[in-house]
Length: 264
Image (cartoon, rainbow, N blue to C red; front, side, top):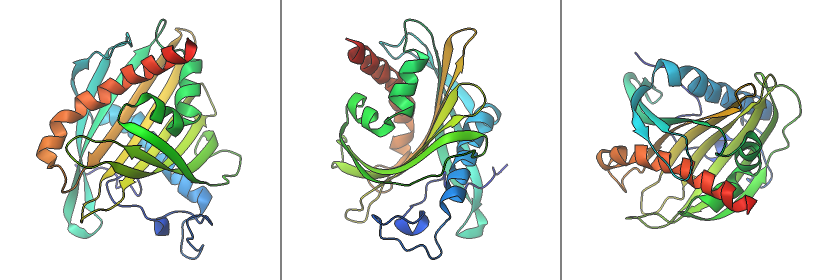
């Protein structure tokens, strides 16, 4: 069965012409999405993916460890199909991978997750991810305060994430990053859309959502992440898919090590 067709959380290119107006991007307001509507759509799609699809559509694919984090990392996967926007007679297919981990003492605390993932998300990611060697903010939208689809504290930024990648040349990923926190209960999401500078006819695309919630009674942080990526012509999908479970699992340990280092 085809899933609800996403507007933004799918593997297609996003250019300034698809984004809300910002003077740095030099995209004129005419025919561009409204900022509030754009943020609301990203939040809706991110929540649907992490709150509904993770339990309804993803299939468990084993557990992994990721030291120094003590929590086990549950891996799952989903072959997502939806009507191809470019051809109604066909279905688009994307290969999504997800992880779920539950953290309690001595793993990072809720405050650690807020400071490390919700606040300054991209800058912190550049610190704890070995293959990221730089992060630069391109622009930040002035998102109005108030409720967005049951969430508040919404931020929207465009950043450049500089990756040192094996096999292929280094890449600069133009990354759109939205963060928002739940109005009810302790929790937040981070929605990201990545693209790479095109070079010699190739371009990378990636979409991801992270969701963290806190059970105060049990003092447990639940951390979910779902992602899909396509290196296009650089690496065949047949070679990309087997590496994804390991790649997303190690990030848990990277973050735990980052938190430990910050506390020393």
